[in-house]
Image 1: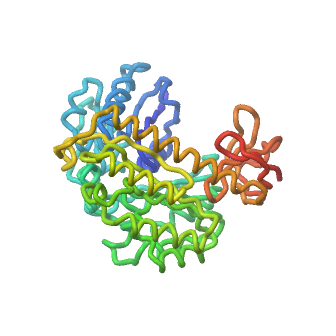
Image 2: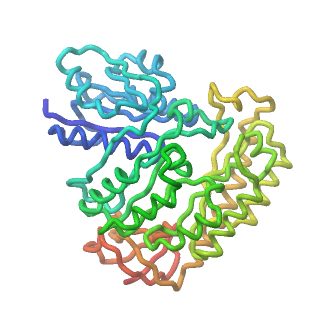
Length: 430
C-alpha cells in the first residue's frame, strides 16, 4: 500500500505543535499526509486528558482509526496515553503506544512494527530535558506556525492532571528557539505562536532568563512579522515584563491570562498562585501601556465547594474586567487530582446554569470589544478564503477580519479599514 499517514490531534496548541513535528518526520521519510477520515497506512492519534470528556474522545478516535483500513498501523501518543498506558494498550487495534516523550522515535517504531508486527508500549517516565522536536515548515502553505518553547508544569493546580502527564518544567534554549523561528520565517510563515504547558515558567529551569529575554531574541529574527503569546499566568505580568513587551514591535497585543475564578476563596482551593487583586493589576498594567490589547481568559465554573455567593463574586469580577473573550469550562473531576476527592461536588445542572450565565456575559463583552475597532485601521494577516468567497485574516489582537474580492492576499499583511461587525468578526476594505 502507498505510504500514507493520517493524524488526529486532540487538545491544546502544544499537542498541535507536536503532531506537526511528528508529521514532518513522516513526510521526510516519503509518507503522504491524508485526512484522518481517509484510508491510510498509518494512523496517529495524539490524545488529551484534560477532562474525562477528553479521555472519552481520545478512546473514540482510537477505536475509529482503523475503520477505513484494518491492516494499518495505529500509533497512540500524548497525555492520555501517558496517564493510562494500560487502558490504551488494552484497546485491540492499538499497535504502538508512546506517551509524552520519545516522539522523535515514532517513524522508526512504525517501520520496525511493519517488519515484525510486535506491539510496542514505549511509555516511559516523563522527560527531565526538553525534547528537541522541530518544524521546518517546508512545503506548507500556512501563515501562522506554532513554536513550542516549554514543556511540563510545577504548579499542581488541584484540578489539573497535566503535571502528572507532562512532568516538571523544561525550557527550550534560546538558540534552538531562534533557529526554528528562522527556519519558519524562511519557509514563509509571517507569525509564530509561542506555546508551552506553562509558558510563563520559561527559563526558570535553564537560567537563561525569563520569557521577556526569549521574546527579545525572537524579535531579531529576519522575515518574522508577528510573535503571538500563548496562555500566560497573571503573575508573570509585572511592570518590567509588560513594559518590555510593549517595547517589542513584533509581539502581538493579545494576552491570554488564565483566571479560572473571580473569587479568592475558590482560587485558593484551586491552588492558583494569585489573587483577584493581582489579576486585576496585571490587566491594568497591560491596558495602560497597550490600550488596544485584547485580553482573554479561561474560567472554570462549578469547582467543588463553589457556593452561589462565590459564583456571584466571579460574575461581578468578570463584569469589572470586560475582557475581549473568555472560554468557559464546567469543572470536570480528574482521577488522581486533589479536587476529585473534595467534598461538595457541584451538581451538573448547576454547572450548566452557571456556564450559561457567564457565556452570555462574556459574549456581550466580546461584541463590545469588536465594535470598539470600527473606524480604525489595522494590519491584517490574511489566512484563507471562506466558503462564501471572503478573504479572512487576523489582526494582532486576534480579531477576525473579512474583505471581499481579495483571494490573492492570502499569506500577506495589509492595512484594512474596519467598517462594521460581521458575525464574530469585522468586515473591512483595503
